[in-house]
Image (cartoon, rainbow, N blue to C red):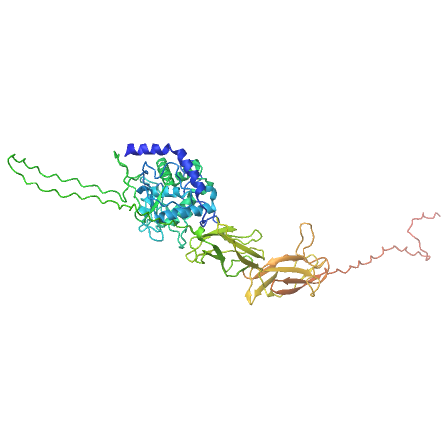
Length: 621
């Protein structure tokens, strides 16, 4: 097998130019179709093991979609189904008979073609060909074990890779609690496209509209694989991007060459076979065959080893004169011949399933009235029904819901556009829509990506939150001297008797109770950046329907004023504000000081006075 395998790998390696040409031709020949629910509305980090799609080495430095699980190494026959370059040039795959290896089970092929149409509708620059999905599906699971799937596309038995416990493979601890792979200790690759659970958590899709993202379903798995291969802006018509995408699926050069060989082979021709009758590969990368030189079998199952004949004891040769009776040997059983096609009757062509996107004729908008109050979730979801030309519902149609630029309403994660898939009733239901702060009507448009069908329009309205009653909590008189602050004011809002949260209440300081006309010199709510008093402001009630005013300050002019509080819906309350002047202090009277005392001259004997005592010289005798 080693020499044969190496020879054929070299053949694949030398056909790089042919593969590149096949990619370009296939990219130009396929029609548009449905788009999967992206996660366009969801752009977070990949889960562990999701693959290093951004690695310049094509995934060699990171994880992979499959956890680098084993794969089938069988290569296609050397003889191509058609002549070199005879690529299909029509959106519909030609129904032909040909080599068994070129046969793809009908449901599996339909899933690949639907996935191609879906991804091309949302990411046409990727140029995803269904033949690439078929090449990967062949190598990963032998086309879902030869097409052993039910009518819904789910495998009849789970397809599980080995335990990824680090022994010969990657070591990936359990990420799904065994939900998909039945293993609560380690992960295992699951389904026809062999996704590990951690990768499926990021890329899983519901492509058949049954409400489940099932890696065991070929429709879901093929669409997820297409999105994974197209990640990070790859253009699969470019050889480098094609190689990088395949390597991100399984980091092996041998894997790359094997997938490319099948990709090229299917690009030259393929045909449908009944489900369950596809050719199963034989050799796997974890089962090397030493010294084998025969070509891989194209039987539907690995051949059973033929038992060695049991040697019989030799009898002595009879004498020439003796007559030995000859025992007739049992007639060997002839191998069962495949049924031959009557050359007089042309083969009955099995019609290729038309993708849902191509069958849908229009979108019927739902009848629900979409209303919400500001900053709340709409009670009704935006829905449309996909129908065909006869009015019958079409499942599996991807529908894009888009919000106008004028609204601040948003889908989850702040998305303005989401894409969902119609269910079995043809109904496509958008995720919950949340209103913003703007109160206004707007229109939601629903379209089918890749089709020029008229958009279905759904009307939506956002209304302001209302309160029909406002009441002050407490009765403390609101009095302050000029320039001083008032006590805090608490007001409660109600609507129909229930507490009203999130209501915008306008507060105005006015001069009278007749009208909420702003005062020119009354109290204020502080000052703005320019130093001007603020006498009008908008407040919002909290979750308990209350609001508080704690920054009200008296003005410089004494007198009576009114604080008006009004809410949409009619709720109004008027509170009296009093500004008092500071108390005046009476002037104080100073006591009159007593006059300075004077010294009276002492009287003399003769009764005269003198101004001041004096010393006279003694008379002389």
